[in-house]
Length: 635
Figure 1 (cartoon, one colour):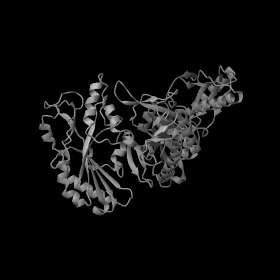
Figure 2 (cartoon, rainbow, N blue to C red):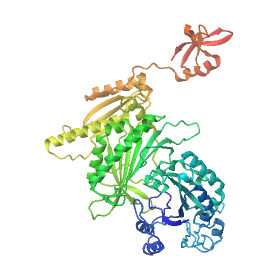
Figure 3 (tube, one colour):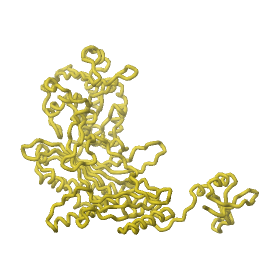
Figure 4 (cartoon, rainbow, N blue to C red):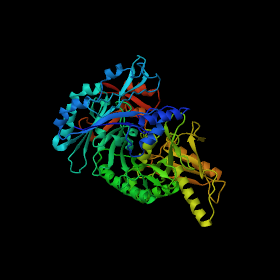
């Protein structure tokens, strides 16, 4: 039996890496950490090597992981050697009693996480000391201890079982019987790789201490170290279900927003498609712009193929589907060419992406502005939530000097909406505005609060056309469309109010807009009214008619154009909402409702409750030995 022991540092942006602010004196700190790495073999990760991690750890207190890996032909062979594998780790109690354990006098006390690492030489009888991370003391005076040992085991399919479900159940049953020793030895995770040794994709089964060594189904057939590159931790606001794909390099997840309460209804369902793009030879760390353009298009097509299958078979209607591509090779490219290339690809396949409800995409990569230039880690975010405007924002990953966190910093002149956020910030669930937008788009129309942006895009397009025809550069010093909303107040008049989109309680929304055009550089004012299809399906009642009429009068009195964007379902006859739940029907024949009814009525108690609001008029009658109030008018 051959056992390989290893130790590594979590990458700088890993979500489990502790964060501290940068120390003032970095030189002594650097020599300390690099010296600790001199005995380690230099191993490249997907995006950065240990030398880069070492230089980063000069600023951040590093987070180490230690463990071992071994391979066996049969499961019985693994069981026979299990105790030998566990002997490589010292028990927690023995480690606690060691003078080198944090808090026992062998290490300086600090409020920061402390570590004691000892990786013995791979000789007979050598042991790998258990590494425990000790955080701040709790109120009870106890330290939180987190296991950090990792075990990777390779098995053959013929040596365990050929059916995937049987394999998973067999491994789970065995680990349940060994749970006490796994906990005692400080095992954080154990992953089994099961292969047929014939070149087909292996099975991966991962079991974690955090779940009492139950299988982590999200990591099924996913090498756990790969999860960091796929940034699955950012999906923590969702309950995930892994969806099988025919392309094993593409990872597809069906996500449902986590419930706020037990009785809450989940309405946010979406697909997350994530993939890693490597160079063709899997070794090169540099690539050209042509490679990026070609691979981006290939990956876009393959992810859409996989998503289309899942989208058509999904039991739930999904929206805001998301694509994530992690480019491993460093790309030599200028930022403006990068945006142009990505935009052209998205526009080329825009209709298909829209049909699959892919509204967001993200690309992670390292670029150089010149072949010998400095490597710049960047993120490209694409968003098309409204359906008619593709927003492309580029960010650079930088360290926040205050917190030590890796954050997004806008790259270029445009400041994107994610500027200043942490790179590992979770994806947010769909807000109320996006739910309304989705409802409107399902009706084949535009959400009412997207209309000002629609005017803005039309004016910008006109400016570009004018610039091209006249050969003059555009130098706009203000927004091309300035809009202020009118709201119907208690005096039955419209007043200009600043409020958040979607706060309306009337099915017609009105704005006064100033359009900055070449003909009117100081602004051309117009009044715009539009139906909100998400409010009682855009129907007209008294309040909607009032808003429409008042907006029209404003335009007429000011002598400016009035534009009405219609998306309604006609008139709406109102009925007191409190009455809907209370009235009863007096049928001609209670056993045969199809014969019609005689009248509508309220019970005595219900009439007393509603009479205070003056929403109904009724006359008292007696029928079937019951006092009733026959409804004559609804106000």
